[in-house]
Every structure is written in structure tokens, then in C-alpha cells.
Image 1 (cartoon, rainbow over the protein chains, first blue to last red):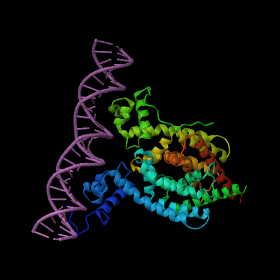
Image 2 (cartoon, each protein chain N blue to C red):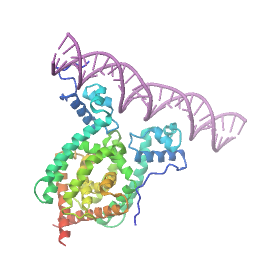
Image 3 (cartoon, rainbow over the protein chains, first blue to last red):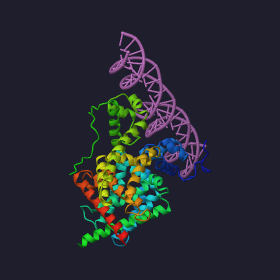
Image 4 (cartoon, rainbow over the protein chains, first blue to last red):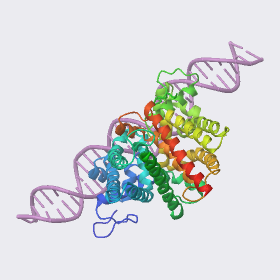
Length: 216
Length: 216
DNA sequence: GGCGCATTTGACCGATCGGTCAAGACTCTC
DNA sequence: GAGAGTCTTGACCGATCGGTCAAATGCGCC
């Protein structure tokens, strides 16, 4: 029923170039809105992309391969943004501010991706896919934090990592629930900026305390 | 002191009293280890419980009903623990310490439950089930925080809620990933106690800052 | 034109899913 | 013992799943 090459296919509002890109885009949209790895079928993806279901397997091998491809695309953008924020000049405080800013911006823009990744924590089958992006992220940030924080104890870098990353990411992943109790979109302009100010404030509080204990 | 193990769900050879309890226990174990709402079948549950599959529907109506029953059981224990910690005497600082302690203990013991709940954030179909437990929890804690924190701004009670709850819960839900990079079990004795000290330290930092700005 | 290769198609597969059903078995009461 | 009501059983249903396949189509190249 679908016309040949010349005209743009009757696909939704995404007249993407190649078939592969159309499938990837459709999978992205579905994984991030309808549900995680389970909950989305190859038929759904194919229908949304406006292509035959067998093409999903032709281009990505399997459902898991498609899921990996979707994660990979986000992962690259994610890493790029963080490296940029952390690699610049300035002391730890300045770089941490840039880092949480970049992290918050990325996660607020791709909140569904954050939710998708967090959801995989409950699925041992896909742990490996998430670990791949988690470990470099952890090493990256822990290294920066070790400039001012000890390796162990209540103010250890590993503790700060979880606290700071949680402060950023949970605001985005819990957005659907927060939206109900706050009466406004947590990812919208006023509340997101309040969150940004809060995280900056928190970072400063912690770094101030670390400096004090260092001087003592 | 506290001696908490990773809380492996009830062992298979559990000759529980009623059929209903056996099914509930099996569903609990499977939801919390294998995967979320999707990823566990009624056949799995029945087999683990050692009963006929049709009994799942006889006693719980549907798969969703079973899932709700499992969540409900945790939810009650959760609420009980928090109310106990927060309702006692003392100033906000003392009550917040008791609260994060109780929260951390509960989540460390039932880390898989926390992960299960967080995973449902990606599944709009089950949002309603999670909201039911989230809203009272939020109101509860926000009310306590409003004694010392403003309603808006970078140190707003709603901001502190997300930061504190994230600091506690993410340590538990990210435990599988953290375990890899830390080389030890985050929910085991040494690291869990380090986390407890960190969260207490963090709460004190924040409350100190709030008191200072209040006096100013 | 004709060949080779990548792409696309629709029909098809076995497995598994949540859920149903009518018939048995068990238990308690008269 | 008869009956009633609660559990329990295994067989069964339609739908859907991920994945496969041979055949058809498009297209660059000689």
C-alpha cells in the first residue's frame, strides 16, 4: 500500500531520511513514552515507523539490538555533554557547577530517557546495557570529587556522587509524580530553575563544609 | 547496631499457611528479583507458589490485582515505619534524623521493592498504583520540613524532599551498579553505615544553613 | 539488456501471555 | 448422608509476542 521512493511516506510527523533512522526514531519515541524494554513490541515500532516489521530485524538483528541502539545514541550525547562541562578550566567548584548544570539540562530535556535507564535497574537482563554507561560516568565524576573529598567516610567522593547525581536525576525521573503534588511541571521554566538553584546551593554547602574540615 | 543483609526474598521452601499467602509470597519474590510488572507471568508465580495457575485469578482477580496486593503490603509497612519515626518528640532535626534512619533501614532491607516502585515510573499504566503511596509520603515529609524551610526558593521544602529522599533511596536502587564500582555491597554493613553517616551529615549541613539564613 | 546486491514484503512459526470454564474435591452444617 | 459453599484442578481460548523465510522489488553497474 505504501508508495514507492519519490514521495514522503505517510508516516507520522517524522519524515526521516533512511529506514534505519525512521525505525530508531520510532523506537526511541515508544520506549520513552509507552514503556521500557518490555511493553514495546516490534510491531508497534514498525507501525509507528511506517515500515514492515521484518525490517526491524533486518536492520537491528533483534529487539535487544534495537534497544541497545536507542540507548547508545543517548549515551553518546550524554557523555559528550558531561566531558565538555567537566574538562574546562576552573577549580572543582566551578567545574562541579558546570557539571550539575549540564547534567540537569540534559536530563530535563531527556527525562524519559533517564526514567528508561532507571527502570532497567529492576531488570537484571538489561543491567549490562546500563552498566556500560554508568561505570565511566561514575569514574569520571568520582575523580573530580576526589580533589576535594576523601576516599572514605561520611563525606567520601562516592557518597557525594550518589547524592549529587540523585539530586539532579530524581527531580527528572519523579517529574510525573511531582507534577501532581506541586501543581506545576517540574521540568518547566519556573520549577526547573528553582531546582537548578537548589542543586547549586547544595553543592556549595557541601564544598564549603569540605574546605572547612580540610583547613581544620 | 544495625546488621542488615541484602534481603534475599523468601526462600522457595516456604510452607506458608494459606494458599493466598503462598501466592503473595511467590509474587513478591518474583516481582522483586526477576523483573517488574511485566516480566513476571502468572504461570511463574503459580509454579513458585506450588499452586494451580487458576488460583492466582481466583484469589486476586487479575495479574494487576496481584501486583497491587504486593505493593500494598510493602506500602503499609513503609507508612508505619515513617509515621513512627516522624511522630515522636524532638525538634525537626531530631525527627529528620530518625526519619532518614528509618527510611534508609526500610529501603536497604527492601531494596528490591524500592527498585520495583521506581521502575514503574516508566510505565504509565501503573503510575496510579505508585502515586497512591507517593502523595501521602510527600505531604507527610513536606509538612515536617516546612517548619524550618520556606515554601519556595532554592531551599524550599519541596526541594529538600527530593534531595533527601533521593539521597536515601538512590543508594539502595543503584546498589547493583554501585556494587560493581565500589567492589563491595552498598547494602552491607560497612558501606551502609557510611551512607547513614553521610545522609545525617547532609541533613545537618542543610539544617544548619537554614538556621543561619533564618537568623539573618 | 542482464547480473548482483541490498532492501522490502507478507505470510508464517512456535511459544507464551492473561484469563476463563466446567467439573472435581474438600469442609462444614443440618 | 445430603446438601451447600469454598477451594482447586487441568484443559482450553484468543491474542500477541520475537523471530524467520522465500520470494519479490529496487537499483547501480557492466
